[in-house]
Structures are given as C-alpha cells and as structure tokens.
Length: 153
Image 1 (spheres, rainbow, N blue to C red):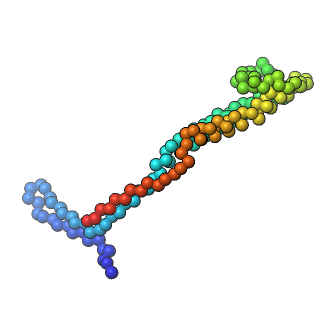
Image 2: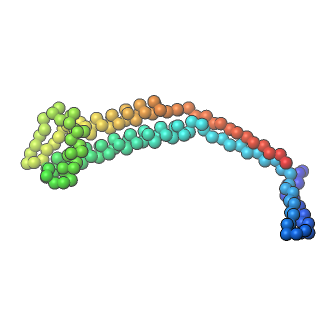
Image 3: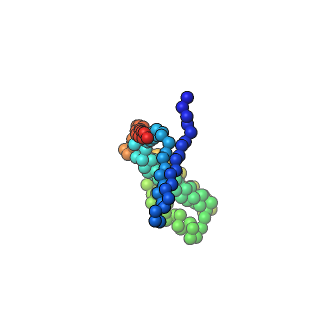
C-alpha cells in the first residue's frame, strides 16, 4: 500500500543580511495531463453561424412580406408612413410574382396572390441556400486529437 501523504519540508536559514533562503521540497508524484479537442470544430461552428445568418435574413424577409400582406388585406392607408416603408422594402421582393394571378380587391382591401406566392417561395429559397452553404463550407467529419503530457518528479 502506498503512502499518499504530501510531505513538504521547509528549511529556514538564519538571515545573513536582508535575504532569507527558503527551500521547499514537493512530494514525489506523477502528473499526467490529457487534452482532447476536435480540429474540425471551429470550421463547423463558422458554417453553422453562416447558415443561421442566412435563415435569419430569410425570416426577416418573411416577416416583412407577412406585414405587407396584412396591410394590403386590411386596406391600410398607402399614404401612411409605416405602410409606405413596408411597401417600399417589399415591392422589389414581390415584383417577380406580381401579375401571376388576378388581384381581387374590394373597398380598398386587396388580396395580393403575388405576396402569397412570395411567402411560399422565399422560405424554400432560404432553405436551399442554407443547405448549399452547409455542403460547400462544411466538414461533417469530426475527430478527436489527444495530447498527453506526463511529468515525473
């Protein structure tokens, strides 16, 4: 059975001038340190953040298009500042889909089928772009690199 008691020995010599000598002896022991890490981790993390950024951008586009649809459907005043702002931002996004279907209107309320199509198409486009980035910039493999250091006293 081994003795696991730490032994520290302190020897003090009488000071000669203003210097004091202290000698400490540490117990004999072995110390092993193992460090494991994934070398592909940082790249996988950057890819994840990039894909999440794309998804965020397309979520904001969806939100703006939904607000546009609600404003048009409820017959919002097109001269109001907020409506002008939303329409100005979303008109380029809806432009490719305008004219695909007839636009029913009644008492100033408009159901824009082009906006509905945009609400369906843009999430699909965002998902495809996210997946392409995932494939183009990613490392799906993982590894564990281990480094061991042993210090013997």
